Length: 159
Image 1: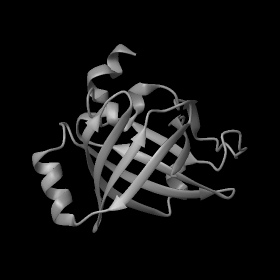
Image 2: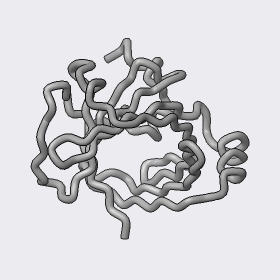
Image 3: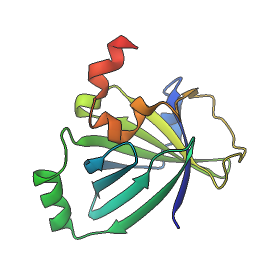
Image 4: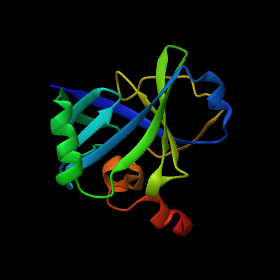
Protein backbone atom coordinates (compact mmCIF):
# COMPACT_ATOMS: atom_id res chain seq x y z
CA UNK A 1 0.00 0.00 0.00
CA UNK A 2 1.31 3.47 -0.87
CA UNK A 3 1.04 6.05 1.88
CA UNK A 4 1.79 9.76 1.74
CA UNK A 5 2.17 11.85 4.88
CA UNK A 6 2.74 15.41 3.75
CA UNK A 7 2.73 18.83 5.39
CA UNK A 8 2.35 21.96 3.31
CA UNK A 9 3.25 25.58 4.09
CA UNK A 10 3.20 29.05 2.59
CA UNK A 11 6.51 30.89 2.66
CA UNK A 12 7.46 33.80 4.91
CA UNK A 13 10.42 34.95 2.78
CA UNK A 14 12.50 34.13 -0.28
CA UNK A 15 15.47 32.94 1.79
CA UNK A 16 14.73 29.35 0.65
CA UNK A 17 16.17 30.23 -2.77
CA UNK A 18 19.71 30.14 -1.36
CA UNK A 19 19.41 26.41 -0.63
CA UNK A 20 17.98 25.16 -3.93
CA UNK A 21 19.87 22.10 -5.17
CA UNK A 22 17.90 21.50 -8.36
CA UNK A 23 14.78 22.71 -10.12
CA UNK A 24 12.47 21.07 -12.64
CA UNK A 25 9.43 22.15 -14.62
CA UNK A 26 6.24 20.12 -14.20
CA UNK A 27 3.04 20.04 -16.17
CA UNK A 28 0.12 18.08 -14.80
CA UNK A 29 -3.59 17.58 -15.26
CA UNK A 30 -6.38 15.72 -13.56
CA UNK A 31 -8.50 13.02 -15.17
CA UNK A 32 -10.56 12.80 -11.98
CA UNK A 33 -10.69 15.16 -8.98
CA UNK A 34 -13.65 14.39 -6.79
CA UNK A 35 -14.20 14.35 -3.03
CA UNK A 36 -12.94 10.78 -2.61
CA UNK A 37 -9.92 10.57 -4.90
CA UNK A 38 -7.94 12.09 -7.72
CA UNK A 39 -6.20 10.70 -10.81
CA UNK A 40 -3.38 12.86 -12.14
CA UNK A 41 -1.08 12.74 -15.15
CA UNK A 42 2.30 14.51 -14.77
CA UNK A 43 5.18 15.22 -17.11
CA UNK A 44 8.47 16.20 -15.49
CA UNK A 45 11.45 16.36 -17.84
CA UNK A 46 11.55 13.10 -19.79
CA UNK A 47 9.42 11.22 -17.24
CA UNK A 48 5.64 10.78 -17.26
CA UNK A 49 3.46 9.19 -14.62
CA UNK A 50 -0.06 8.54 -13.51
CA UNK A 51 -0.88 9.12 -9.85
CA UNK A 52 -3.90 8.03 -7.79
CA UNK A 53 -4.59 9.60 -4.38
CA UNK A 54 -7.28 9.12 -1.78
CA UNK A 55 -9.13 11.86 0.01
CA UNK A 56 -7.09 13.46 2.70
CA UNK A 57 -7.52 12.48 6.31
CA UNK A 58 -5.49 15.27 7.86
CA UNK A 59 -1.97 14.96 6.43
CA UNK A 60 -2.26 11.21 5.68
CA UNK A 61 -3.55 9.64 2.46
CA UNK A 62 -3.13 6.66 0.18
CA UNK A 63 -1.05 7.31 -2.93
CA UNK A 64 -0.01 5.17 -5.89
CA UNK A 65 2.19 6.31 -8.78
CA UNK A 66 3.25 4.52 -11.96
CA UNK A 67 5.35 5.45 -14.99
CA UNK A 68 3.51 5.70 -18.31
CA UNK A 69 4.73 6.29 -21.87
CA UNK A 70 5.36 9.95 -22.69
CA UNK A 71 3.13 9.79 -25.76
CA UNK A 72 0.23 8.59 -23.59
CA UNK A 73 0.85 11.36 -21.04
CA UNK A 74 0.92 14.06 -23.71
CA UNK A 75 -2.29 12.78 -25.28
CA UNK A 76 -4.07 12.53 -21.92
CA UNK A 77 -2.98 16.07 -20.94
CA UNK A 78 -3.93 17.43 -24.34
CA UNK A 79 -7.25 15.69 -24.88
CA UNK A 80 -8.63 14.34 -21.60
CA UNK A 81 -7.37 16.28 -18.56
CA UNK A 82 -9.57 18.91 -16.94
CA UNK A 83 -8.56 22.52 -17.47
CA UNK A 84 -6.66 24.45 -16.43
CA UNK A 85 -3.53 22.32 -16.32
CA UNK A 86 -1.13 22.88 -13.43
CA UNK A 87 2.23 24.34 -14.48
CA UNK A 88 4.92 24.73 -11.84
CA UNK A 89 8.62 24.70 -11.14
CA UNK A 90 9.62 22.37 -8.32
CA UNK A 91 12.73 23.34 -6.38
CA UNK A 92 14.44 20.71 -4.18
CA UNK A 93 16.24 21.49 -0.91
CA UNK A 94 17.59 19.17 1.80
CA UNK A 95 17.56 20.51 5.34
CA UNK A 96 18.28 18.63 8.57
CA UNK A 97 17.70 15.20 7.05
CA UNK A 98 14.49 16.06 5.20
CA UNK A 99 13.74 16.86 1.59
CA UNK A 100 11.72 20.03 0.99
CA UNK A 101 9.90 20.58 -2.28
CA UNK A 102 9.10 24.19 -3.08
CA UNK A 103 6.46 24.49 -5.81
CA UNK A 104 6.42 27.80 -7.66
CA UNK A 105 3.21 27.90 -9.70
CA UNK A 106 2.75 29.50 -13.11
CA UNK A 107 -0.19 30.36 -15.37
CA UNK A 108 -3.51 30.84 -13.56
CA UNK A 109 -1.83 29.88 -10.27
CA UNK A 110 1.05 32.36 -10.66
CA UNK A 111 2.06 34.04 -7.44
CA UNK A 112 1.50 30.92 -5.34
CA UNK A 113 4.60 29.32 -3.83
CA UNK A 114 4.18 26.36 -1.48
CA UNK A 115 6.68 24.32 0.56
CA UNK A 116 6.01 20.60 1.12
CA UNK A 117 7.71 18.02 3.28
CA UNK A 118 6.95 14.30 3.28
CA UNK A 119 7.22 12.54 6.62
CA UNK A 120 7.43 8.92 7.80
CA UNK A 121 4.75 9.38 10.46
CA UNK A 122 2.03 11.89 11.27
CA UNK A 123 3.80 13.04 14.43
CA UNK A 124 7.37 13.07 13.06
CA UNK A 125 9.41 16.06 14.24
CA UNK A 126 11.24 18.18 11.66
CA UNK A 127 13.29 21.36 11.55
CA UNK A 128 11.25 24.42 10.54
CA UNK A 129 13.39 26.72 8.42
CA UNK A 130 13.04 30.47 9.08
CA UNK A 131 11.50 31.00 5.65
CA UNK A 132 8.56 28.73 6.50
CA UNK A 133 5.22 30.51 6.87
CA UNK A 134 1.65 29.50 7.70
CA UNK A 135 0.78 25.80 7.56
CA UNK A 136 -1.88 25.02 4.94
CA UNK A 137 -1.80 21.20 5.07
CA UNK A 138 -5.55 20.87 5.61
CA UNK A 139 -6.69 23.91 3.59
CA UNK A 140 -8.31 22.27 0.56
CA UNK A 141 -7.92 25.40 -1.60
CA UNK A 142 -4.19 24.62 -1.88
CA UNK A 143 -4.55 20.99 -3.05
CA UNK A 144 -3.27 20.79 -6.62
CA UNK A 145 -6.46 19.03 -7.67
CA UNK A 146 -8.48 21.99 -6.40
CA UNK A 147 -6.11 24.53 -7.97
CA UNK A 148 -7.03 22.89 -11.28
CA UNK A 149 -10.72 23.60 -10.53
CA UNK A 150 -10.46 27.03 -8.94
CA UNK A 151 -7.05 28.57 -9.68
CA UNK A 152 -5.26 30.81 -7.21
CA UNK A 153 -5.91 33.93 -9.35
CA UNK A 154 -9.67 33.45 -8.81
CA UNK A 155 -9.64 33.50 -5.00
CA UNK A 156 -6.46 35.13 -3.72
CA UNK A 157 -8.05 38.60 -3.51
CA UNK A 158 -10.96 37.16 -1.53
CA UNK A 159 -8.78 35.66 1.24
